[in-house]
Image 1: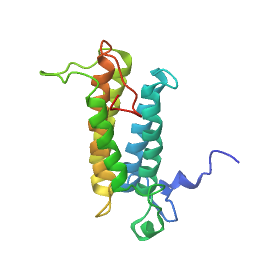
Image 2: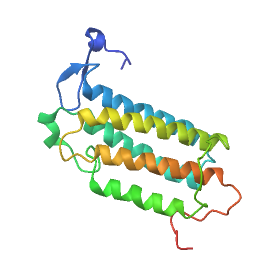
Image 3: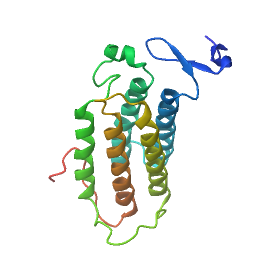
Amino acid sequence: MKVYTRAGDDGTTGLLYGGRVAKDSVLPTAYGGVDEAQAALDAARAEAPRGGELDQLLIPLLRDLWVLMSELATAPENRHKLTAGATLVTAEMVAALEHHIDDVSTRFEPPTEFVAPGQNRVSALLDVSRTVVRRAERDALAAAEPGSHVVPYLNRLSDLLWTMARWQEDESLPTRSIASPED
């Protein structure tokens, strides 16, 4: 199978479950922004210790972004074909981000003044990822259907990335396992 199809040479792209739209329409703009966010998170993950806590937290987030892209790549008339948690963002996915924010927030002293990002490479990449997610959130506003959890998910994800970046800056405090935040 070849990577190229030539089907998009006319300036259109195919959607999940059928249909074609202009490549610069709201749906490809929105899922393209999420794709950029995923690539930014990939760069942060590449710098994190393989199998470490940060890596273990990023992998499910990267998978979630595939769910967001699936939802955003579906025409409104085909949205009923989406599957919660697999191709459709759920309220539970948003709540899971809130849990992670609360957990990671316990791992460092919160800043009391303006944060100058870039204390180390991982934290800087997480901050870049946060800004890309914020842009994806703005793009998703025009594309998400009423009742969609895409925009709240992206909003919470950017909060989590800010929190993770501050956590990664504070290497002097011991970290606890994400699986058991009470320890």
